[in-house]
Length: 178
Image (cartoon, rainbow, N blue to C red):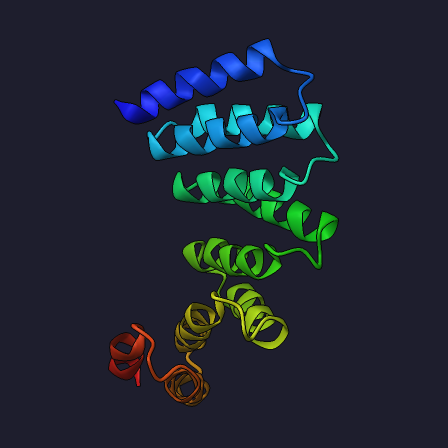
C-alpha cells in the first residue's frame, strides 16, 4: 500500500515538474518502486523515459542496470545481455561495471554458455576484486568451470574463494562443490 502511494506521488511529481532538475531522480525512484511492486514492464518504461529524456543524468547507469536486471529476472536473456553490454560500453569505468559483468555472467550461465559466463565472472574477479560482487563471481566462476568439465580448475577457484573471503556466506556452497 505504501509503495503504491509512493508511486502515485512520484508519478505526480514527474508529470507536474518535468523541467525540474530532480525529475531524473523522481523517474529513477518511480521505476525502482515499480520493480519492488513486481511490475517490471512498467519499471522498464519509466527507466526508459529517464534514458530518453535525460540522457546525461547521473541516474542513467543505474536505470540501465535495473532495466537489464529486470530482463534477467523475467528470463529475457537477449534483452538483458544487450542492456548490460550497452551499460559496459557506455560506462566502462562506472560504479556498476562489476555488477554488470556479474549479471552478464548470469545471463550466459542461465543460457548454458558456460565459457562466456566464465569470461564474465573472471572479469569481475580480475578487474574488480574488491567489489561486493567479487565473492559471488568467484563462486559462479568455479561453477562455470565445473559445467565445462574443468573440475580441477573449478576446485582451485572455489578454494581461492574460501581463502580470499573467509567470512563469506558462500563458504558452504563452495565447500560442497569442492
